[in-house]
Length: 223
Image (cartoon, rainbow, N blue to C red; front, side, top):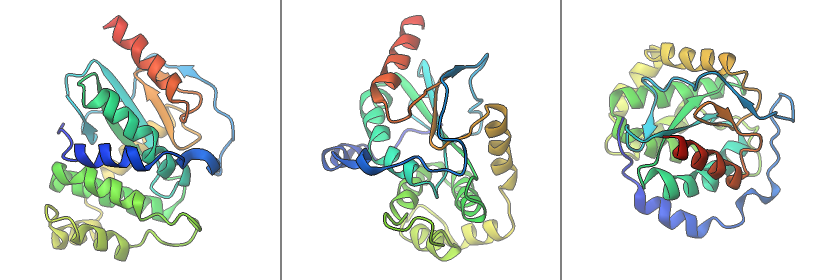
């Protein structure tokens, strides 16, 4: 588990992103409601990309999809606030678990991200953010998440060996990691993206930052 190299990016973007979530509708091809549920255990983050102090007492997990417009909006707003308030202060560690609700493009994005994480964990979060940034705001249903786009982003990140990345993706080398995430999606009955869990609790509205904070603070009091 590695600490993020992009503190300055987070702070700068927080200033820019003031009005993001307003027009976003969570429009997955699943149900449009989500009941708050507490599970007997939290999702395993063993081997998952994780941001923050590995000894942080609270774990926040996002089940997300690189093709999901609501995930992009959540990343531009709530995620950045969460990182600034809790991850950088050592109270929370954050993990991202891939969801493949949008088919082949979701799978390609997940496979690319998992491959980069295996190759160089320090490069993972920069790629993760840039892949969401590449999602078009006007027509996210267009076929934009292609191998060409993945390689374009990867070639712009010096820490990534792009030639090796392309070969590993073509060989599906990290597909087991993608499949592991799909098993977690099933295990925790994830029906919408983004779905946010604070330890064992699934947050009803992922854009309700006050609810996320309340869940975190409650867990901190118990630890």
